[in-house]
Image 1 (cartoon, helix red, strand yellow):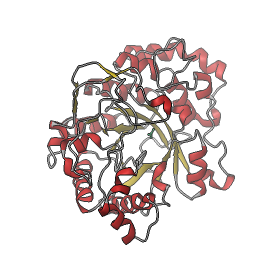
Image 2 (cartoon, rainbow, N blue to C red; image 1 turned 120 degrees about the horizontal axis):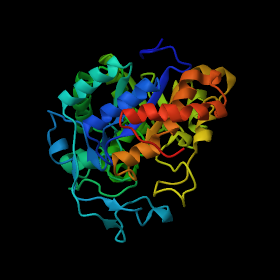
Image 3 (cartoon, rainbow, N blue to C red; image 1 turned 120 degrees about the vertical axis):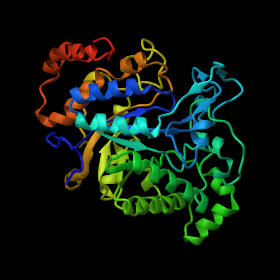
Image 4 (tube, rainbow, N blue to C red; image 1 turned 90 degrees about the vertical axis):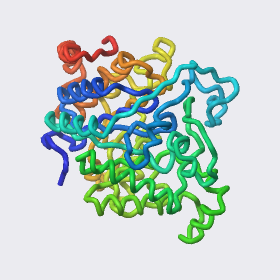
Length: 396
Ligand code: ACM
């Protein structure tokens, strides 16, 4: 059974993820995106609302999340200097910043209105608050949310910050408070809790975290994350919601609560792993990461790196590498736009379209979609329709 509207497509979950954290998007543009998605018969807007570099969801219980956590002093220009060494710790001394404050957030009322607006167009808005990693903005607002209580600033560079959430009683209380508010605002039956890229260095250094691990009889900190995620899933279940998380949520074993995994790592290997573990899965591999360039990187504007072109997206096979007996576990697919290297809305449309049209057709028509040549022939007219909504694209 599906909780999603417009159930008539080849795949039930036909999604698109918008990162509103690395760069903040006015609500007007989010609505425009919803208009465009509706034209393409997509039915899920996965709205990524918390990050190291900015917290975007108004909380009445934890107001400093937006008073402090929604704003960064400045933003990295270009790439983090240390990335190339494989060291993901950002803000190295060589990095350059633009000196401009950046941020913003969505009020609960605005988000409720967005949900109602999207619903009328057959789209469910699924919110994501990332926990327990990617928490630096929340930590800047409330230093007590880290085991070490360190005072931090909202992240201003790209990469994975090592500062994460404490997952003892206080961390859990924080998450439950936020989830209470999230469930109040979003009528989606699904809540995405992130769970990706949570470095364990702080936990390993913390006596409290080490004791927690011992108490649950675990050996590796991934098991502590699993324990945390299981408690979150149970809490959401009590509230009548289903939990989704990025594929890291099964690293320490599948958490309880029958979660759905959004599989992103290693192109399509993550989905092989999650389906083999019996977990319902949404395909979101690197091929569908539209923050990656859609043409040769030397001819495209700065992006996170090389990616799939339009034809490759149209040829996407969500069952590739999935065992026959696990295919039923593929719930659908989604593309994502992470916005580190996407500073303006025009650039966002440029990165997303026309690739999102290709993905939408794979998701809606499946094997019944026409040949790539036919698809290409229809594209100019479809791009015109999007243009009439104020949505641009990469040139064909
Ligand atoms: C992710 O790209 N960190 C889910």
